[in-house]
Length: 257
Image (cartoon, rainbow, N blue to C red; front, side):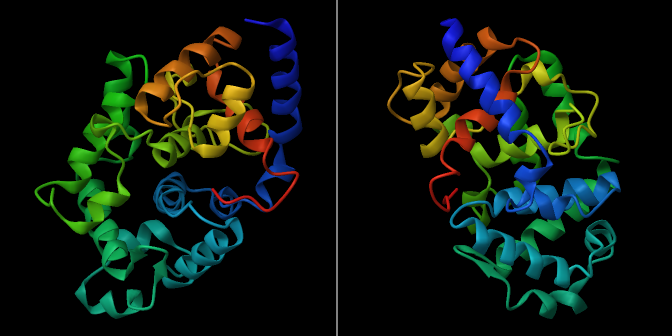
């Protein structure tokens, strides 16, 4: 790996991996919470909503917080049919009130089975070197018997080639712990070394510019190729370079994610 590339990327990581980054970013809303279950629930949903203009994502997140009375975990575990009307006006792009209701009801069921979403993700990371199987099995558990429901499009499926950008971003939030004020590091059963980098059109373009990625499609095969390159730069914490690759697009204009 070219030493000049590593020096440049390490510089960009330091530039963007700090608390200033979160102010105009959806993750900033998640930082309003300190309880692990609140962070998990709201983090998963806001990560799922994270496509499009960042300002619109944050606005949708703020609307969601109002619906949940700023108490995501209690809202989810105590949600019942009488409260369905609270969701009626929620919409973010193609994620509508039906999808939100499905998320809440499925999370409610998951928290009856697990104390934390970490318990659902962690076992597959112990057996594998990237997030592929963990995301596949999370999707299976989350959809349950409703595998043909419309909401399935909002849960990435790496088996069909999806890069699973938003779920990999959520995992980065939960697992990385570098005390920089961005990622939470509340999950301790998953090694940061096994995380996969969130890949989209912006980070993919940056990765190709640094010769870290040759594959043209931003799909799961590209994620695996990028993982290999980033682990050569830092085997213990490869996805820290997500800050560098994504951050390149932020300075020039308001970025769609």
